[in-house]
Image (cartoon, rainbow, N blue to C red; front, side, top):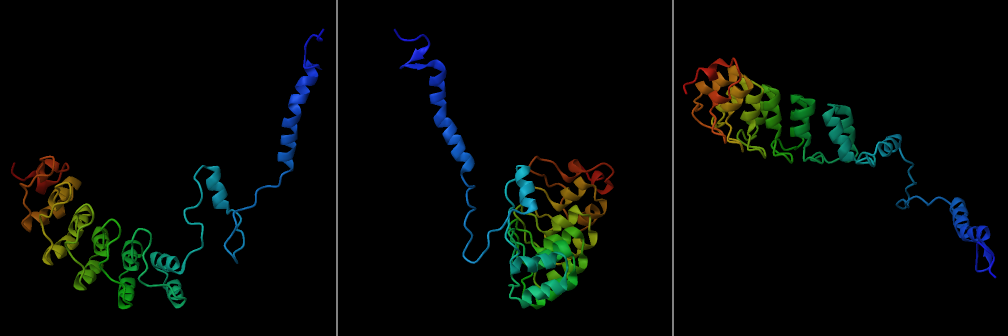
Length: 258
């Protein structure tokens, strides 16, 4: 007769122990196994340990750093332009950086000199060394577009006098005049109009500079655009005129006829 609580001749407690032995052996082997080696580095380059920033990013679930490698010469050059650091810029060039470099958004040194450094002397310095003045970034915006946005008439004048296109539009079909109207920079608006900018140019939404000026409450720019022949009867993609878009208190727009 088979003993109660047994199978194949083993008592139940012993049978359970026999089943557990393989699992225990596997666990012991895992504890003794060495940690996997790091991904091999390229020949001649030591294995890099994780930076504090990378560790923090992993802890926060942000993944690895976007660009863990050290600056290239071109990146150093563009960084120096952003900071308006002429000595660092010259060192980068001495070490072989290409002055026509662009960042990952297609921004040239001249564009960054306008957008970040906001320095006309730096723009001249770069232009004298062959950097093009009118190259657009991936959004279609040029140095002139950013200079108009910030109201830098001196930079706008230099760029236009050296060939920048006054009606060159970005991906939203907005030329520099739009960006000047956004900021209520009347001196820049007047200069661009004097140099051939179209007063009733439309963007991808059917807006005109006058509609933008009225919607933003930029009374001085709206008044100037009307004096230069802007058409107040034009309508945007939703059928609204500049008057209908007008911000409260923007007299030149609110006084327009229906």
